[in-house]
Image 1 (tube, rainbow over the protein chains, first blue to last red):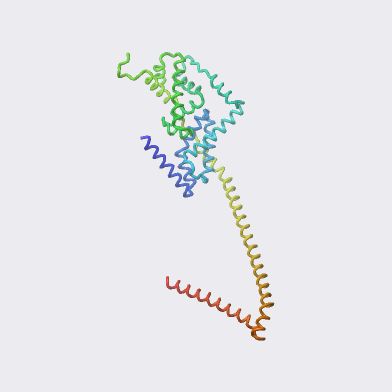
Image 2: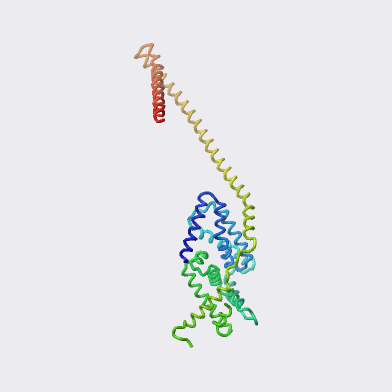
Length: 200
Length: 143
């Protein structure tokens, strides 16, 4: 099933490349948007956290893709190229934001992450609490886990989007889940399984 | 109490966590007007692209003009060189060949040099004419 989806995706990419080779840049961009605009936005959401900033980054990334489309030389696959453009755009925006927040030192950011202590409030929705726990995860685990569920649990797709090997993605997912389970237990909300089942 | 067929508690927890995460981390939809904003931005940058394209074409045109200019100057220099060389060769021929022709063919030997030139010219003209004629015949046969 997943294999069929991958070959369908590859065929759609080939169609876009053929349009580009034929000089139909506008038509190629239309097809590209149909196939990638949601993925690009989701990648931006997972990297940027803030939906508004993610939307801006996605717009800028796709504009860059549009400008560079006539020069696309097929050295990398279409998806790799688009995701690389998007990641670079997001990382630049994150760097800029970090400079503005005067948190240019990664150690400072890690300390800030570690300082995030999730305290359950009375009557707080379980899903909200779980969302907070996910947000408090170390950055690489949070990004991987978020994108994994956004992309319907496709490790291959997450690996392509983040530009990392599938093994790294699996390791990050395993560690993220282990950390979450541990933190759910640490909240002392009773049986974590029951709590999670209520959340689901 | 767990029966031997029940999954281990860790697996149940994993399953519950997976279901809860799937619900919590639902994929966000595109913001309203995303595509329209992108289209508007594409239209806005189009004139810049056209200006860049025009500048690139003008640069290419200027390079081609410069190459043509260079070629023309080289051709003029070569023509001038050929003319000077031919004049020099003619001067040498007159200086050295005429006394030799007079000595061997008498006073009428002076006319031998232009006569040889005329013969060579005629041979060249006829051969060119013959080639053109045969080419024309070959073409007419093909048709």
